[in-house]
Image (cartoon, rainbow, N blue to C red; front, side, top):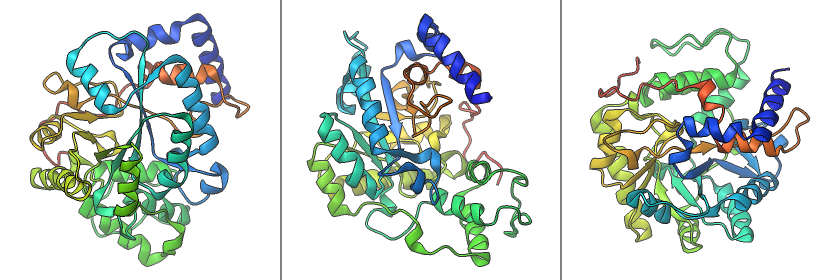
Length: 351
């Protein structure tokens, strides 16, 4: 029922043009379109059995998105987008930039061929500490572990944790990641693994440095996503400096290219973390909401995150109306923003 109501609203808003009006109220009119994706897979349904569904997009759906956006926007890379943002000059046809987070191997296997087929530039934000290793993203590991133990008693990690009883595995995973430090999160994961370890082959891994260099030479812009995908508002200043400076320096050393672009892990940031990103030498930073920092607007550029089912109608078919509402951020006015961007402290989320 909720899906049908949302679909009906999207059709009405798109048909009347109100989606564009509401999008302008949420800030869309003044910001170029930046789309964010995570993983691109061959088959969404089978991949969703062992991965976070909202991080997945089939190659077929990616191409559908690119076709829709390309009819209405001119694709640009992040360097050109940054130049437009710095100059503040008006452009003719609206521009759009495509980005991918985390640096999974399936970017090379699935996303890159689709982008090359369509002639679309893109950027890949990489978690450098996982490149060329068998280590796994904490959110992937936590989600699968919570999925396996669904219905059991609350996890006992020996530290204070948010109340997650009754939540879905995804809700519990998001709550934990947003509320505790990386060290505490590792402790939770170890406690869960002691109960029911998951074979390493069930997880998806990051690219190697050799593959990342091939991606760069194929024309994909490489940006930083920190060293270990920390939630920056949960960590100390020393940790954030190490994660932002260290990741940029390693990318520049390994790939021999300047790194000017940064994406906040999980899209979470506050004034203190933005200041560290500026000090680390980045010129542009990308978030997941429409809030802009008055002091650092170029380091808080909004992105619209999309996945396989984000633009489907109630019959699970691709919908132009839903895509239009997502692109114009129509639903942002209803959903609002849960973050506290103005906090200037470090590790200000309770651990």
